Image (tube, rainbow, N blue to C red; front, side, top):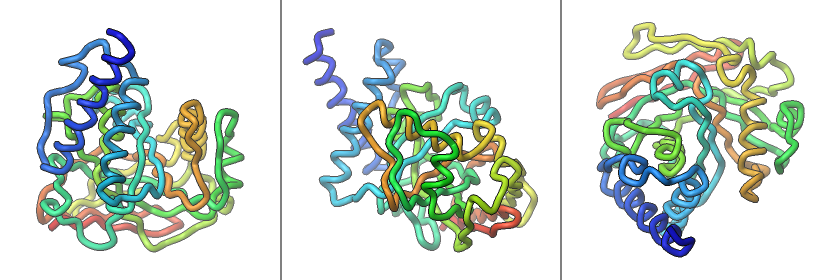
Length: 264
């Protein structure tokens, strides 16, 4: 396929995923229809969909890394991290309205959010650089949601689909990461009041700060920086859990605070 034809295909797929996002519907896996697609193609598709979201008035406020822990990789059958962008409309402050947010097949995952005070520009970013650049960390639920039918995703599908990001909620607690041993941070999660899962910070590439460094370096190869003020979602500490209307999830990031995701 010529470069022009490839670019045209990427644009068509970006429009398809954007329309699926807005309509709240899923599509046949991209890699199933176009097996020659690469991760670079997927990134260009994701940028095309993001450009349409910006044209619709959304503003980029951060980035995310996903599929970082072995339980999530095993669950999804994707064995390398993905990456995407966060917009202001994705940050939910209150209850999560499934219909209003056109969520299709949402799953909740407990994470540590980093909010930066200084920019990070890869390559060459280290976990120590991330710690120095972070204003605070906070407990967070990311609600992942795939526009790919039945979550039948490979790495190309999920990168193209903005790392399967739906919306996210950040708890009120704030902590200086330098005051904590991030790999040893312990999270427990309940669903509708019953214990669901637990995990450690080390589930995320051994150290959540290392995961953020990976993200900075990966995006740096595409000329994208992690900017001061950005919210960075560092990856799930526990397996994903499906969510439906009426579900209430609560996570406790022990020694820091709690976060709630309530679906209406």
